[in-house]
Length: 134
Image (spheres, rainbow, N blue to C red):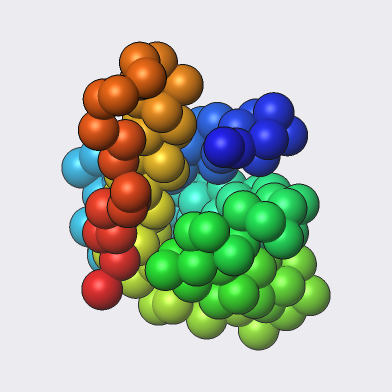
């Protein structure tokens, strides 16, 4: 069962995923390279996702260990401390390849949590959470 704190963190992670996804609408690599505000927004939201991931409980990390939480946190550190050395290709690739699966995974965790909480005695309880990461 997820803690109230972990649920709140997941909801915030989802919010930042949505913000990145909104920035990706109609965005190709050329536009990404030219639009400083879009780059900044995507970077900020990826940084926020990493910061939030740092506050997930150790119990959460043990249960949902198929997600690369360490890499997500590391990406935050690279963005936060890599002033002038941010690898924009890595940011772009993260945005287009990793944010949607992370969003879906967090949604699935919360969905399964709701199902667990609403399951009546004797019904099948989901034992695993679908993992969308490669």
